[in-house]
Length: 339
Image 1 (cartoon, rainbow, N blue to C red):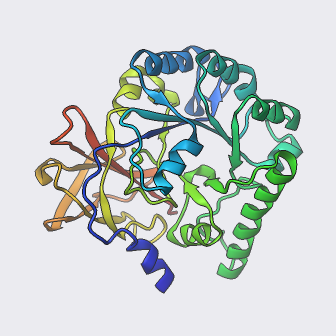
Image 2: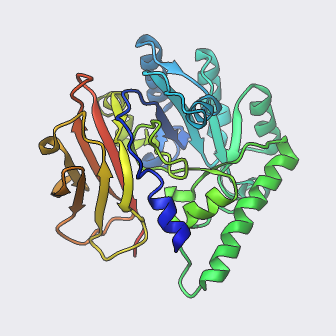
């Protein structure tokens, strides 16, 4: 418990607001033949990349961004990182040729056991090795792509901890054996994590990456870095372009932000640096609907939905317009993993 409290309070020291932030984009499929909920068409994907090029965004590798954060360097104001999850073959067949045309680096998080079993339309190791030869970064998405955030029904805590640790380290071993990979980055399957899982990831020396939306800045926790999903309805430019003008909400203490703890509806409580926005302009939403925000202290607020969360991927999204950067919004997304 002491370790978890320390992790939650890791940002309890004074942090001035960060005026620069990077955006990490997340994709799964680039195809017209796959589920729309996790897909962009090749035309939509090309439109995204063309917008980034035309508006002079710096598309950098995930390795570059993570190195900057670990060194305490602010990312470039217009930095964008492109990532894919799961290793589907349309990444090789559709996305990769388009990305090569633009010369943009990107990262693929994959689950080695699914590649070995050829589960679904996944790439072969030969194709993955060709991507790596072309400069694509491959990283850990766990080996079996199971739910990792909390014990399964009937599973003891000890069994859960052993299963999760084994899964993460097995994937890392497989990636090192197949590709020589040594960087320790984990994209959580389904974007699900908990404070206890974050603590394990930290102890294992990994960086943890989620699927909740938001920008990445120096104040972002390295065990729950956000990414903007860019598929389905979010593929439209009217949804895509505003993401590029967001800043990381400067969280100083994650008082009540464990995705698996608490009653339903959950209460989010954060201590933040609000020096660059008006507290009256911070708004939070659940499933697109406004939810109640209560300021407990001048720098601490709580937010809670008025009814139980029912959808599978549950989020609270909180935003506030920046005072110093016209047209930019601070953004924080809190995922919830509850039955």
